[in-house]
Amino acid sequence: MRIGITDTLKEDKFEQYVQWIHLMDESIEIVKLSHLFGNASEICGLDGLILSGGGDVHPRYYGKENQLHKTIGVNEDRDEFEFNLIEKALENDMPVLGVCRGMQVMNVYLGGSLIVDLISEGFGDHTSVSDEIATLHKVNIETNTLLSAFINAESAEVNSFHHQSVGRLGRGLVCSAISDDGVIEAAEWVVKDNMPYLMLVQWHPERKKESLLSQKIARIFLREARQIKTIK
Image (cartoon, rainbow, N blue to C red; front, side, top):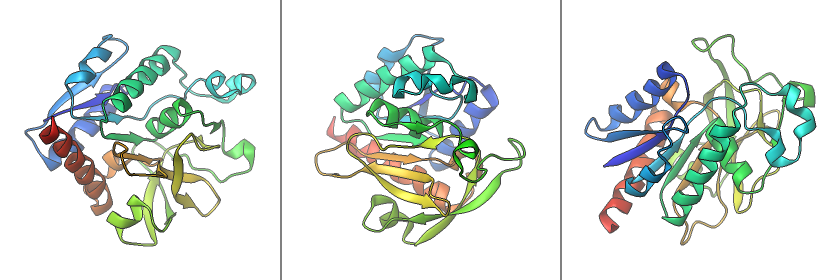
């Protein structure tokens, strides 16, 4: 089985995704998808796509270009490359898992918006002291969602490394987890029938790979990817 993971542009961060997936199955081939390689065409030979974390999506894509000064690490080449990957993945009914920025770039692709900076918009601080020391907080799981079905709990504790979040949900998406201060922490398709698997989470399961929640997220994504491979 071959899984594509978008380039985080920081090798140590990318390796965390690789280790997370290989913890589930060492035999899985990982393909790094990057605008630096120009290898978007490789997605056609993959069984699943992970949209990784990283810098902010340029706010011009969701009508807030005047707030560019509030962003961090914007890279429009990466944005365009990943929009192209998402288009190809959806066309091929490919399972997609979005993590942090990955959730945000999918939401923007689907016509949604982002909150450019949570603190300046009156939300709590969802950043962390450092990449090694995470802020932990509770998320409330929405009932009757895929997330609630495989977590089987009303809430969960997650790590938090983001200063942005989803604002207006994109076409076809529904919130599946929300923080106490009202930040959308996970999303999925409203209607699942005849749609490829999609799970979007704002936290970083790959940085807490030993946790039961992180392993469930990886296992279910990989299960869906195997099913698609079997159909192919």
